[in-house]
Length: 337
Length: 262
Image (cartoon, rainbow over all chains, first blue to last red; front, side, top):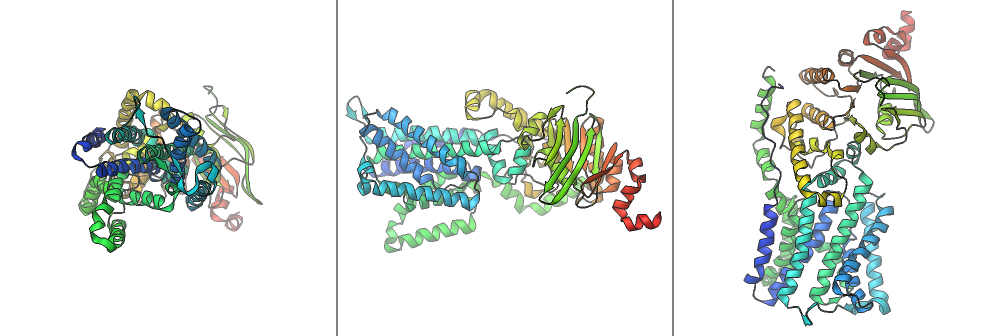
């Protein structure tokens, strides 16, 4: 048995698909001429950034946090307020808002990560509701319902044009995408998945479970803040709607449609969730119904999402031919060793 | 670790759960190169002892030393980097990962810990990742499952899963391999296969602690055996000595039967 020839190790995934996606992103403004379409493309990237953080946290590490929209909103508010109130430059305000969210998510994570599953979900959801309440009601500080204005980004005294803004969003999305991908393809992503599947076994193999969970919580919070900052300088206004339920619902829909715990699920999902409603406007009043049906079909037939089907096609293919595999296994076992 | 000292040493270890004393004043040693068995009827405290050694829970009192270091109260994740690896009675493989990736996780402590070291040494990390894939492949070949490397966990039989678990534990090149009922649920052919593999590991000098239910299996595999009953150690010796011990016979066949025989 031990003399059986050793097949090559299956090859590790490469970075090539990531570069293809980024190349597509670079070329997009050449194809999309209307400002409306560019805005949609920016929204796709913003939601993709938000959901990559959620994907690492829930899809890969199994820690469900429904508080992501709060970090998204806090990132956006901080970016605007640090500039308007303290006169910080946009770059400083960007770094400041990421640091603020990192500290906040650390403080929240320390007590909350003792909770699991739906308790963690409820506690983080409560955090989102509190954040939203503060944004709505502390009017002197947050501007209440109408929110705050974010100064437009400038280059050499001139406001940066729409295409320029798009490329800034793309650069930030690229950074998050590369980080997301590096994590997933490395031992760190493997350890995260081990924690998701079985904490006790992960611990026995030397994975420092609590430390990893905390790190991923902070990282996903920071990614949400990056998305928030992008939203701030693309829409130039930040209001409490950033942490309302529809953002949470969009995030969860992207996770389901794209595929939780997949490499490209957040991007595939973000494209569909942002673009599909635009295509469905022709259904008029029935738009929401068709959209809902669509999500339902995904849940029923593609539980791993679109990206899941593409990335795990070898598993799916083998499963359909499993009877033959099983008989082959028995043959191998009968061979004298 | 001193060359002559025991690899693992339990000294008067006690574990209580409320009023129940699950492990009562148990002491024993494992010397390097030895294959030690730990047996006893259901509820004897074998699994709890196993948990105490692996750090899943701390003992109420007593001391556990591994390679001369006091590990009594160190958490479970510190064991693997020190050279202690374990398998699980109920197979606990990661269902979202492929067979190969599961084995690769056994190499986790050898990777840099944290995002920044990984980002800064990205090139070195890719090479290390490649080496870890090759190493995991070798281990899968050793347990005879190289052709299953890319498969999902759910596609394997129980016997194969146990072998993956052993390959994963071997990945860290442990100085002590702890196996929790490795033969449970296996058919005769699979059990024989497992026995051959453990014999081969022993020949290579791997020290092992085997918790087992299957008496025949453990008698063949072990150099010495600790027998527990109702939380206490009742015998410690070679398989031949232990199988003649009247207390052991009483524990396994019932005290009344032992008295009747006497």
